[in-house]
Amino acid sequence: MAKRSIRHAFAEALIELAEQYPNLVVLEADLQDSTQSIQFKRRFPERHLQMGVSEQNMTGVAVGLALSGKIPVTHTFACFQSMRAAEHVRTSVAYTRANVKLFVSHSGVSGGSAGTSHHATEDIAIMRAIPNMTVVVPGDFTETKQAAKAVIEHVGPVYIRGSASDAEDVYGEGCLFQLGRATLLRDGQDATIISTGTLMSEAVAAAQTLATEGRSVRVLQMATVKPIDRDAVLRAASETGRIVTIEEHNVIGGLGSAVCEIVAQAGIGRVKVMGINDHFCGVGTGAYLLAEEGLTAEGIASAVRTLIG
Image (tube, rainbow, N blue to C red; front, side, top):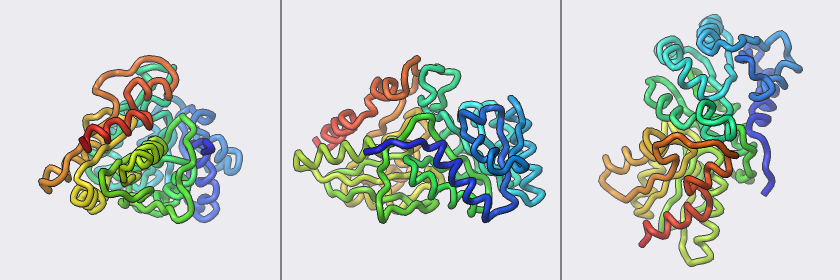
């Protein structure tokens, strides 16, 4: 499958949406080449605001713009927005329900060789714990473009988690992103893999491998981690009995935790959570670091085999 950039997808979508929404503005924290907001700047220079290395101030300015009727979209790395500006996101954005869209790149370990300071394996947990915050983690070029449109149309704060890594094209004809809804990529009866972000390509590959062994595995892409699609999770738990969750995030507090909360409260099914195993990752390419954690098609398939037993 072809690989394309999620950052470019979001930038392309914003330019298209800006034609429809004249009040859409972009704020950048001095990373316009890395986040690709530079594309928006070239098309709409008067609607692109360079805020410098000042994520907290950028967040505050975005709130002011939102309260003035604009649709502000901030751009920076995931680690800086979710941690350096966390208090400002919580109190200024979420508490006031400001219509601010927080787009981040370099999430998970996609920052690779930049090391722990530029990795973001805690951000989903932080953002999903903040009231009024919607958390979206698209997984490929097409899903990102669809998610961007839904996010801009939605009124309220949204955290949109992008990646520095290119992602394999998985979304095909008939795949439709909807806020708060899982996308069924494959149906199955023996187990379910629930993915979020770019790992959905590994989830599909794992299911394809398992199919050659006679195992029927459902694959759900949970691009909206909050509000999560409870009905899809409950159907997976009741109909397949076994769920493996995968995410480029700490195993604590992210997609896996959200799924476990639903399954535990319902008292049905078993869940295996796969992700970053509660430690800081080292230095290397994003692909290398994910392989170290077993977040590959074969690693996922092995976890499903064990769960099926």
